[in-house]
Amino acid sequence: MGKPLRRGWLVLAAWLALTGVAAAQSPLALARLSGDPPPGQVVSGALDEQFERVEGPAVLEPAEPGPHWWRLTATRDVAPNGAPQLVIANPHLNRLEVWRPGQGTPDQRATVGRHADPSFSARALVVALPDGLWAGQHVYLRMQVRTPAAMPVTVEPLAQVHRSDLVHVAWRTAVLVTMLVLAVLALGFWLGGGERGFAYLMVSLLAHVGFLVADGGEIRLLPWLANLLGQDLRAGRLFGAIGAIAGIGFLNFYLDLSARQPRVMRILKACSVTMGLVLVATFFTMAPAVAVGANVVVLVVAAAMLWATITAARRRERAALFLAVSWTPLLAVLAVRIGGLLGAWPVPAWMAYAFPASFALAGLVLTIGFADKMQQLRRDRDRASQLASFDGLTGAASRQMIEEQLLAAVAAAHRQGQPLSVVFFDIDHFKRINDEHGHLVGDHCLRVIALRTRNRLRTYDRLGRYGGDEMLVILPDTRLGEAFGVAENLRAAVNCRPLSINGARIHASLSLGVAELAAGESAHDLLQRADAALYASKAQGRDRVSADATVAPEPAASAEVA
Image (tube, rainbow, N blue to C red; front, side, top):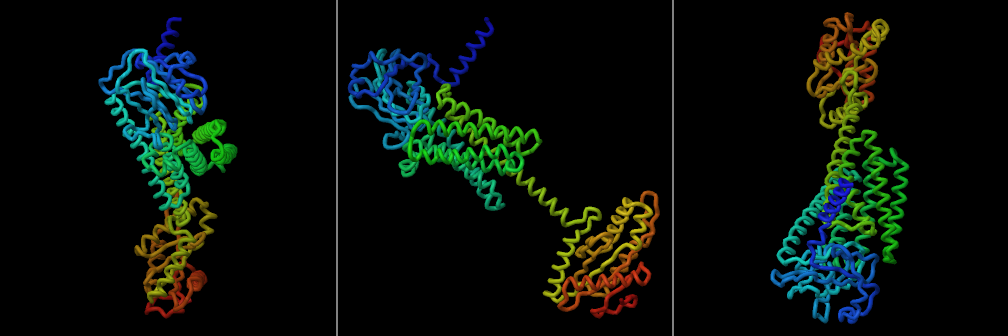
């Protein structure tokens, strides 16, 4: 039993160290009073015998919202030197009244509102003890509880309080600024790329910023907004609900849940509707059941998101990796926090920093992951566009692309008054090549001929595969006679030497038709005349160039007119 006991003590010691409420560090003993009797009776000591001693560290743990009384008793002298301060950490929106020894009127404290003390951060409610405390003296607390969370009570020198405040403010500022910067980036990506997933991410980040400043008290820096939203829990629930709904929309877009995991998406849609109903109910009642319902819905959403992430990861979806890295710390912290708010366990002191930090980390990783997803989508789109624009076999432009280029070239020629010619050709007896040597050899033959002809063209000429073994060449700023010479050059590039493919020597040749754009002529009519010239070459024995002379060519002795 020795080793298990030692492990138990080590776990307990670690927990106490993390929560920061070890009994040895506190000079206070805590007692609780049931009900809400008149303050005069309590602070006079008339009801001291009714207080029930709370064992363990001095941690205020109200079971439910409403007014609660506690009595703090000094277990040893607290000297006045060092300006001791009574510090009630993790106050949320709870309001405090403190009666110090010999004091007839209470000190009132809150994180927001007219009782907020701007001398200290919102991490704790601080009340000065100018005379210190002597062993056995009582301090009475009346807390108007709105968030039933554990609130450690300590006595600290003023210098230590200020140091802790500086750390708190620096940490919270870094987290909030990070989230705001990420929200601005998401806005820029949304406006620049039009991807609505970035809009969901932006709304989610801003909603979580609103939730954190309402929950953590920074909202008091904007008095008008604090007076409007920061006086009760409605603001936090409003921002939390908006953040959850936007997060569901983002997750659906990010992992394409509607198509890939429809069952999970149905659960999340039901959660969105429920969260909306909770939000509406919040404006009519502050009953604890509403908060419990909202927290349960958040846990269901978290579980569904975790399941969706695991499922996507099993399918080797890259997006799931970023989601797992971002959500795992957040879900763990969220579970600890909600469990503490529901009374399942005490909320550790480090939660004040881990909770907002987990949001910032999640936002940062998701922004990187979403940017990566957008880059992948763009790469896929560019690849699809390239496949649609270029023929995969020959590397020449696809039929759709070469037709678009022809339309643009015809429009430019008419607009600028410049000549334009086209060459239309195919491979002689290409069917015989396929029948005698097979389609693989035929495909290789097409690739070689496309390469040879492309190498004989100028950089601004365009070559496209029109269909089968037919090729179309666009020759900008070129008269018919010059185009005829280009076509002869293409013919010579192919029949100059046999093609050596898989040990076979294939004597290939081309039949070509040439036409020049006439005034006011359409691209369709130009192409038809080039096609007619091609068939004229076929009819005259193949392996030759023919020209349609609808537009009188420049002198060219070798031109054959169809």
